[in-house]
Length: 499
Image (cartoon, rainbow, N blue to C red; front, side, top):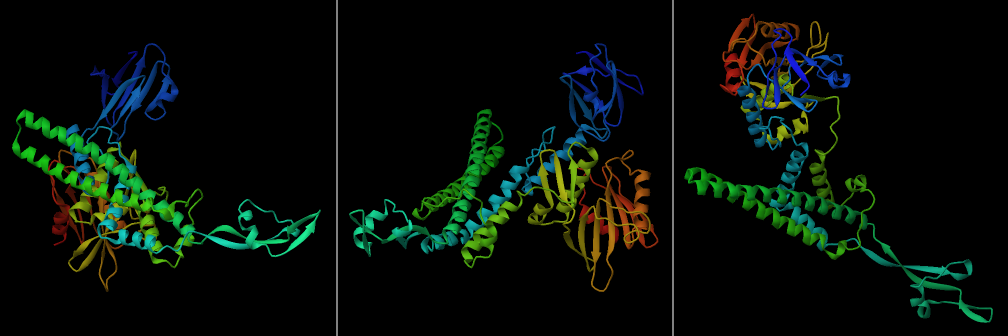
């Protein structure tokens, strides 16, 4: 193996078990390599290289697996694997309901941003098809064609150097209007002929063909994906029957299979209809090797083309690069970020925020979550006030705050006609002390409450088991536990704080 790992504080050697070292977060370790083969570049993100024989590693606020010389080093949480895995499981369950693709049950918590985008795009496509609008628009366009090719009349003056084409000779006998003698031969001076031209609407048909292929390919991918799910589900049902397992479990899986097969049938039917449109003769000579002029289409006076363009842009919007000053990136391996994200989706879920609203707020890439902090979420009306949830709302020094600038994890804006806006702040803190909120975290809530102007209170969300509330003049400071080990409805608990 080549090296040994020691806890620096206790000098305890870490055992090598099941082909890996297991270390704890927020602890510092030293690596001793008797072969002298440690390299500085191996420790740029995980510690400090001291010599070829000695280096230190630390993992602050991280849960991850990294490799060193082909050996796995796994970092575990002080909160325990049970808590960590339950948080991931609950995140996966909530994201599944929100159509946010995630295989959150895996240790790596790898996320598939692309699949999420396709889910949204296909949902929009199916909605438009199922309500009949998309089919009606396509039928109108193909049954009322104002596009294609036509024969345009032109006149060629041969005395001025115009050249005849092979197609021109088909019209020589009937289209020559005058002749001259030249080198002992009689030749025409002019000729009326035809050229193949296209109407302006061929440009629009390029987009229609492009749109149909885009939808066709999305459906094709979905059909293939469903086929794998159906095959796997059939095998599971078969295995359960062979084992003689609980009939209720078999019935549940059979109902799921029936639903998947029904969805598959509908997808195939839509794909068939799209293919019929694609094979229409009107599209035979339509090519789109260049770019599509979306600006011209937006200005087009044809309602049906505008409908297709609007639907396409909605489907495609989520595929745009994620780059904005308003975006907050959360690393999936950070315990702090993992818990911060968990509390956010728990708030959205417990306050019954519509799924369609949440889709615009949360994006994904392969290594984390991306939250658009510019998007506020309406979460209800209580005590005559409208409650709106903001993620990382910034209160600038001098204008929003009496002292420094602050940006609590979540801020609920309370608004009512005739009143100034007021604020309730919430902060996710993933640590606790024997199930109780830590003093430092309560101190931070006092800071938010008294530093940020027009604050009504500040509350810690933490993975403990005991709520606390302190009345400070006309404001509230407190803590609510937020954990899958002992879940409570955050909506009910927050409202009780203000009753």
